[in-house]
Every structure is written in structure tokens, then in C-alpha cells.
Length: 95
Image (cartoon, rainbow, N blue to C red; front, side, top):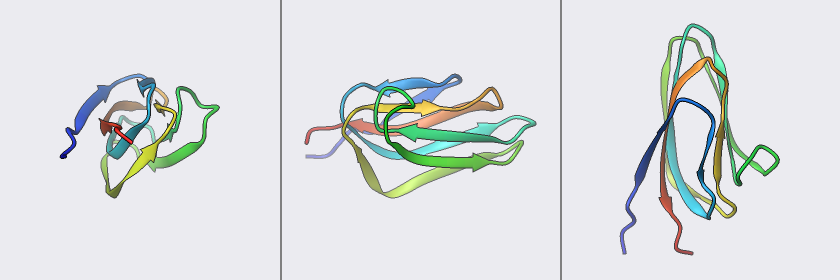
């Protein structure tokens, strides 16, 4: 069975999913300041850190994972105001 990949666009940190899911990648865009974007396996930043990306100012960086990462407790993305947009590529989990 093939999975449907969902694209979640966000301009502020948010919970993408509160259930287990698969992370396929993220696309990060910054303004005039560099920033760090962190993905957690859960609904907040007290859960395990999965990916942390530092992105230079005035940049858009696609990070496409060759193998999706299983997240068991949800998917939360945290960043500051220097990040103008994050796009998360993910699918709901059926494991």
C-alpha cells in the first residue's frame, strides 16, 4: 500500500501531528537572520530531538530524507521569527 505524503506549511512553530507518523523532509526559508529549526518526536520540545538544522540568512534549504524517519509520539517543529516558512513533508503512520 502506498502512502500519501502531506505537505504542511507553517510560519510559526506548531504540532504537525499528535500521532505517530513518517517524516520525509523539511524545506526551511529564512529572512535576513540565520536560524535553527528543530524537529521533535512528540508534541513539544521536551520530547526527543530528531533533526536540528542551522540555516544561513536569506536562504531556502530543502532537506529530503532518503529514508523516512518514524516518529512514534507525534511531530513538532520549533523555530524563531527569523524563519519565514517551514514546509514539512510527512505521512500519517500505519505501523
